[in-house]
Length: 105
Image (cartoon, rainbow, N blue to C red; front, side, top):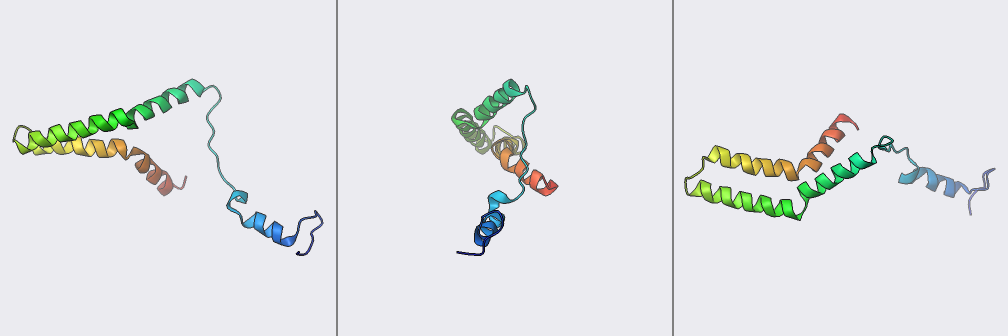
């Protein structure tokens, strides 16, 4: 074994505890008191916007808009906005994570 500290831990165990990722300072963001129903409603909304129904609706929308653009019934500029909107909707989580990482939070 290693050298013993006064607390009874070995030096190797103390080093392992200090170097482990769980021992480093972690900031946790907790919800304010009384916000449970609001958080639950927003979680439902997020699940609805990013779930299977939304994915199916986005695929149908992109297919319909693409067909209309190819047949000349829709301006290409308006069609591209639908596709970009779908990218923003489904990529919102990654976009916000990138902004938070850039801001240092």
